[in-house]
Image (tube, rainbow, N blue to C red; front, side):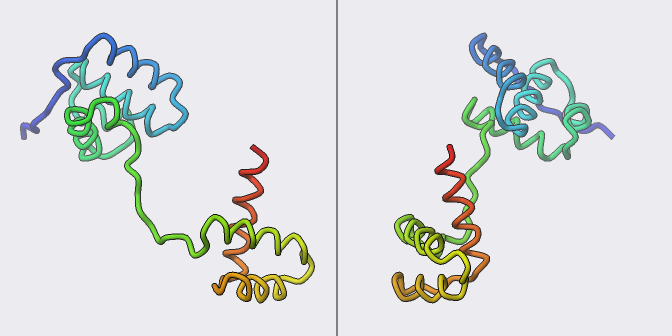
Length: 140
């Protein structure tokens, strides 16, 4: 069975250089992998070959090529995915961490004080994640 293929036909020298740079030095693996796939497509490798090299399904490679054709370099980045909005605003998160640090031995007191001051009830797991997130941001 003859499987249809699509290739990246034209690539400016600037785009080619940026793809090579991304493939070698991009911070995120997925961006490196997508850059590599686009370079391989430009070299006329089939979608199945690229999928084998990159370790993904051929449909993923096809989507990457489509995104490259539509968006160029911007199409290599991860699409922002939505999720549940945070329970606490940034100010409430800061206040929660402050409350938690005042009463580190008494998690139930922390939660009840947070509820009293913010009007929002959170779980101990949520508080733990907020503290971890805020402290890691403050370190950097």
